[in-house]
Amino acid sequence: MGAFFIGRKSYLKIMFFSLPRHSHALKAKFPAQSLGNKSLWCNMLPWLFELEIVMFHHVEPYAGDPILSLNEAFGKDPRTDKINLSIGIYFDDDAKIPMLPSVRAAELKVVAEAGARPYLPMEGAANFRTAVQHLLFGAEHAALKAGRVVTIQTVGSSGGLKVGADFIKRYFPNTTILVSDPTWDNHRAVFEGSGLTVQTYPYYDAATGGLRFDAMLQALSKAEKHSVVLLHACCHNPTGVDLTDVQWQQLLPVLQERELIPFLDLAYQGYGASIAEDAFAVRLFADSGISFLVANSFSKSMSLYGERCGALTIVCPDAAQAVNVLGQLKANVRRNYSNPPMHGGQLVARVLTDPELRAMWEAEVVAMRDRIQLMRKKLFDVLSAKLPGRDVSYFLTQRGMFSYTGLSPEQCDRLKEEFGVYILRSGRMCVAGLNSRNVEATANAMAAVLA
Image (cartoon, one colour):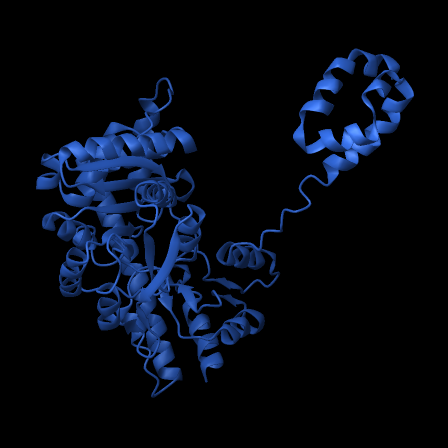
């Protein structure tokens, strides 16, 4: 023991008198001249360890994510007839996450051609970025040809939102982020985590299960210049309530007149109307000449959840500004995660650029969208029969993976506790978790708590 401390006396002197968090306390308790006393070192260690034990005592516990926490609770539920409609994942009619044949075929080709695995550039793989731009805007869009569009490969669309949020904070530090009421819970967390102020604009009409469009326009028409407006390009999460094409066209002049900055979140392209139609807002804004941001994802549309395949795109006023914007996005990535992963992005790029695989994928997206719509119809049919006189047509008009059920938090709790049906306490339900074996049971349980 003595040899241990003698051999490290010089190191410990440096540690004791250099570390700000301990130096004052150590100097007061153990004078410098006593450091040669071996027995004192033995007495000092427990005291030092106590200091380290309380180092993070001020860190508060994490309350947990409401969606992931509910999903964990579902996993612990021993009931065999439980139904999970909480997490935003598409399940097929066998209650499994599908491996799309197009993606599987792409993976076989990518793996067969695999070579060295160098770091990707900070902005990601060039073939991925180009494929994303063509998917969003169309290959011949004027904004692409003018060099006004920059795209980086990100760690899912959540990563795109975060990189975008950090960019906004640096170059529009006093701006406000306006999000729909309600919105995906993580939107607020991402933007507030970047130091931005988040406020809401009217969106969901609880009385009709539809959109408060007039109130939305009125609120945005009073927004401060250069406020950032977060908009769901399609398949609104959590409500399933979308703007129509006409409403997007009516919104555009408000954004232009107030010089607002749209930030589109496009996580469900193809689950609304079609791959092209769900990009309507993106292409409308690009046609108008305004500057805006888009975060998009392939988690749902290609069932690549764990690969974290996403992108952030910014449409700029001109090519010169686009060069600077791309440079700063790269710098942001470098400060954060340096560069994106390779494999998933290459699967996406192969599917999007191989004509045969692209056709397969588009057909698979149609099949997933049709199955969700079929579940909506079956839910509507059972609820309409069980609750005559109650209007539940919003299940048919809402689009994409999610619906707002109109259930109160207490009714959602009852669904879980009495019937083993898990939906968020906000009333959000993942329709993509329904299948031919559980949809009627879900509808019956909902009818029971709504009666």
